[in-house]
Length: 240
Image (cartoon, rainbow, N blue to C red; front, side):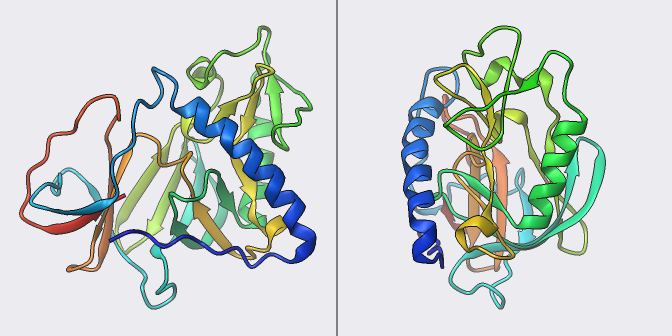
């Protein structure tokens, strides 16, 4: 089952911003397909008996709130091992969105945490590619060069137990043609998303996302796309 594309309820005033983001998204797609980052993407299709069911992290799908989208519900946001004290109230997964979008409050909390924890070797740098960027002592060549400078993000989903999705720096940063590292998580309120947060393509790199429609739950597992994962299960699911 293919995840439906998210339709942004943006006003006409937002359309120029969306067009600019779309142009940047093309550069992002080029970057994440470079050798050493992502070689290919899994096909979106129905699969039976080919899901790494036991190794995946699972949480119920919140169908009642977002029946048109795949949603793991709400999540608390952590920067490294520190809680930012905010929740992403409405989270959906959408591989059709190149970037990840947070609602205004979680976005601002993340930006503050990033700036407060900035390495001494980095400084904020204007870049036309994205709103928030940093430069190093030397231009960055790929996101792999900046992993040691940033902490991972963690989403803790409210599913009644500890259900975590770790987002390493390479899954929320991009490197621009200017050699700067830029935040690939954007403020969704600026394009009319209100309290909706979208986990987009940049964050789902090297992840297999599994939708178990029979059991009404969603799962994910790290699955580097430069090699085929090993499968084995008897559950009917959809891969994203």
